[in-house]
Length: 188
Image 1 (cartoon, helix red, strand yellow):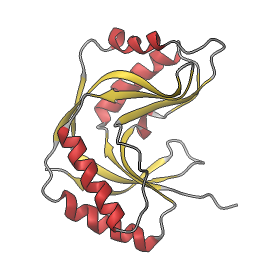
Image 2 (image 1 turned 30 degrees about the vertical axis):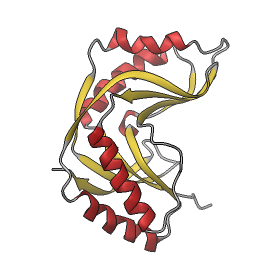
Image 3 (image 1 turned 120 degrees about the vertical axis):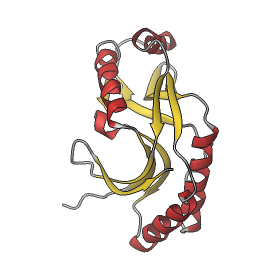
Image 4 (image 1 turned 180 degrees about the vertical axis):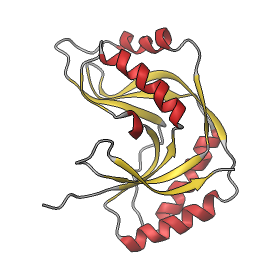
């Protein structure tokens, strides 16, 4: 049986930040029943999801992204709250949010455009940077938005990290962690 694989470009979360997030997620798991929690090594901020990418388009995207990010500098991001996607009473996705960053939006725009120029048809929804923590609410009670305030109890100040790299990841659904770094695009 063959497993379908997907590719995507993302901002890499540094290892020390992933370990802090892992500890926070262990705390959150005790009070928030989601069916699947993301392995801490798989934490990232998606910039462009390519899906099942033909090799010629993937090669073109790689070259385009290299060129687009050549002059981009490292930048600071701050994780400062939690959020959800999906029905408010039964969220589909639970995530950590970053404070607004013009640098992040600029890098995302460059990567997104580079992928479109390589022939990819990408998601047209507005960019909402986030770090997925868990999927599919399975609580017996309705999800209460007040639960999102738990972040402020475990992390008094924003969790600050430096975005130093964009990564081309490949998904391996049958593995844990499931995202493999295929190519690194250093910033700065």
